[in-house]
Image 1 (cartoon, helix red, strand yellow):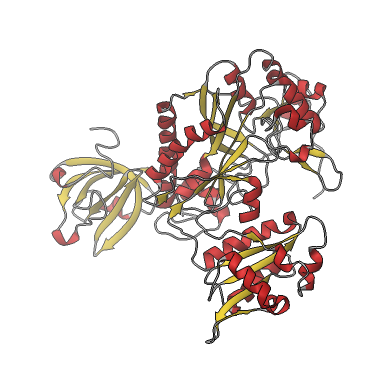
Image 2 (image 1 turned 120 degrees about the horizontal axis):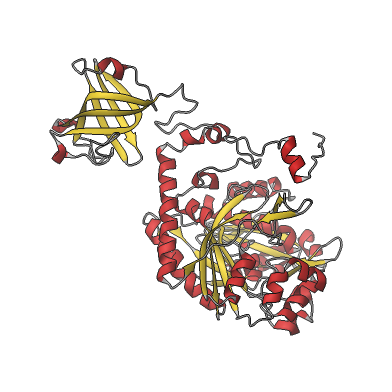
Length: 592
């Protein structure tokens, strides 16, 4: 017999009754039923009930067992009484009577309990992650993650892509976040960088003539943490294709992701129609470039109804250039209580408030109520109602000013309204391509132009567009939004040296700097570079959605905490004096 097991804790069934077996695993739970000890023995595959009574030669040793001890047991498989069968587990028809036992690893008093669904502080869970990972929910999440990655690989291979690995130690590259720098021992005073993405390398693979590339790629970014973002590293399904336009990339990745969500989505509806929405319209209609289309609310510009109206705040606001009044329809939200609650929400978000109108039935017909309705009069109010398609029992909320100043709050309000009124369809995955991103943005204080998004995107209109107003230049750049999260980002690449120099020049990068920082890419484009493009899908975020989690750390095996610390491994740590001396570095003490 094998040294540790003849079967896993999920294999035994009624056909094994009478056999002598060996199992190894962890003590999940111990129950004492009048001198008979029942133990749920657990391994990564499942659970088997084992039992021991005073007739067993190892009863005294079994009595000492506690939760999470790792043990090996030998015993005889017995059929459970009909009334004691547990149909919820594969081994529920049998139990194993213990004849021999060996403790493989005793456990001290536990800082967190594996059995059950108790909540523990995140600090405790991360410090003792190896115990946290034993819990059923975490086992489910991590196995799902592994299965999702395996499925992605199969689907990409099936579509004619090949997997190639790109370097982890490389040069710094602007990708929208801070680099993690790695000092060089062989070249004192010089630094490598961990790649924020395999961006330049995958483009060079296309120049090298390989046509279809993908990789399950680790990426490293020194970012401020959020619930849906790891502060240090993450994994993405990275892909690139040659001789393609934007739609070709969409057509390649959509069936892969659709299949993943259908396979692992637990029966939830997966939208097959993925609309393409411009960045400008997404901001206007949803207040975000990653809209949740499960929520049917679409915001509208209602400026004309308030221009020259009796509501002085909005009327004066509209006299300023670049301002507008945006309406958020709220079907079924037509009560003063709900309207006041949403007004309070706006105040909590730092705004003075949020105007509203709601429509009610007064017995003699419909009436518009609320402070705004009184100020602008029935004719304008009715025009607003008709524009928004609302009726009795509905409401509308209004925000005004320069759109960039209020769009974020408007987007949050739309989400809250959709959730509180039950308008958002929860049992569904709704996708949308966001397209036509602006390549550049202008700093309001300095007036300087810089890249707003990926600097390697092909500008729509080519050189002619770059010779015009930089803020009007759109890129062949796109994101995929799902249920309010950005899952995919990509672009058709700028593969022409003259366009590349001009694009970077507008953002303040001179020719020498471009050649210095992106020399490999720039030089490669002089040797027959093909048109190419691609995208990257965030694996951690995809699994987070599939596992129905709101925090990305629930689907990462060993995540950092909110302060970008690894509490289990005590990272980051202080380097030794010898290490610093060997690297030619000195640490300057920081004031707390």
